[in-house]
Length: 116
Length: 114
Image 1 (spheres, each protein chain N blue to C red):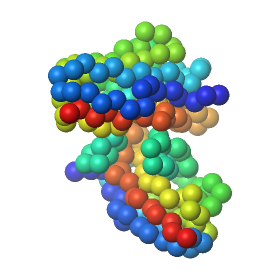
Image 2: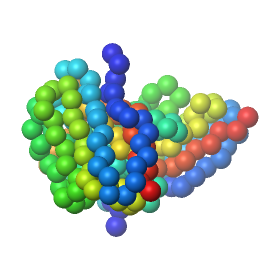
Image 3: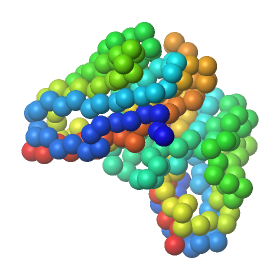
């Protein structure tokens, strides 16, 4: 199993540009999560999907952020327009219900975004 | 105010020594508590998961303990190795909030020196 795959691993862009981050979850997992990690705020959940349907997007910072999951094997997180304060590491994770009701989340390697 | 507080913020120990990382939480009631290890440049990887009724859980040289009365958890690392250098993140899921509701601590940065 290749694990959760994210691309690109690094992205440097100028303020105002559109940024698209991509994620391929582990095959068979029915939950997909997008997180953001910064030194100041740690890990923050942005949005998560169940069976390709967005369930909770209350963590999305503002309308400049949008996420889609067109099928079970692909999701995107888009920032338009990007701002310097969006600079962070963005993680995608996927999960499947575990034996005692909890969901073991498996994280991808992350995309380091730098907005100049 | 963060509902999950970790201490210390950073820690340096010599290879072969033991160490203990602390996690205090105010999430209540809670469903489960997890410890993750995050290597530099990588995503977090789960070490242990404990429900509110469990007191301890081990994973090799890693042992997590939980005191639900005092709302404290600790992660004990035995006979540390250089590869233990990483950030360790405590995560608490509230009961009733859905098993995907996870409250993250800021992490403890551990450095193991030869």
